[in-house]
Length: 375
Image (cartoon, rainbow, N blue to C red):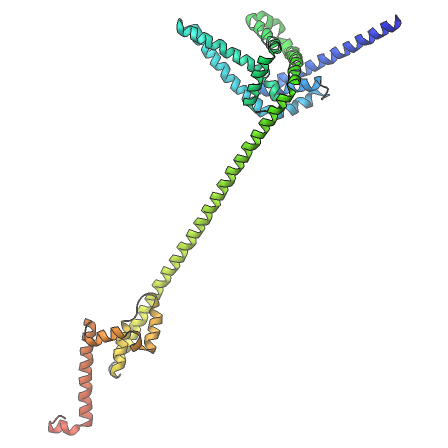
């Protein structure tokens, strides 16, 4: 009898200790959940972090609540917040349908009533496992919605217990405000933690039954995310290659433009210098034309007509060395009188030759001048 009493006493102490531990965990979870929901937009992240912490505590994976909650809150913040915003949109649509149901009559009211209840059922199938799914597994929002619906349909009684645990207290507080008036402080201290701690047992059971399938879906989601990231990197790499190619083309084009500008400026400088040189040569030829022989004057005149464009300097130097060999055509044109300027110059040269002949005759034949006989 003593041993039985001693064993039952130890069992009672163990149950009491376990109950006190659970009460402390619920109180801590409730406090963390309320503090995380203060910004309102973080309600989804706070709910996911609280579920993750509760499941880890029940599986003896964590010993402290606060550190686990903060870590899970940061990890699930983005995905849980996006899911919460999407659910807010769905709730807004349901409220609009409810307003239409109350304001319309006849077939329209009946149609929107059916749509409203179908939407409400669909939303409740998602909500039972949606945030715990995000908290427990690394999945996309689309995959989390799909798995939540499948689990809710496949484990109907677990879904029903979770839904009743959340809906019943909220519905009583809304329908009977006096209840909320007397129990509002319990919501701040314990009720949310109790609901999350109690429903976590059912959620753990469902997750353990489907751990293999859920892990497979998690791997598929990870592969899809990796593939998406690779495609994004490939697109960025392609854009970078195109940008580099365009940069090289622009540099080459700028270099070609600068080369063409330099060549044009060089040609104009050469042409102007060539023109100046020909003018100087023309002046020198004109100044020495009186005392120079006939070939030199013709050659100098032909050299004045052979200067053109960029190669003026080279051609001038060639004309100085061999004036008759460089441009025989132009010299022949000047001799034949095809060019008007050449004709005038030829007539001037002829007159100059006649004058020189007369001077020579008068110098070497003075008797002819006196006697008036010209030989």
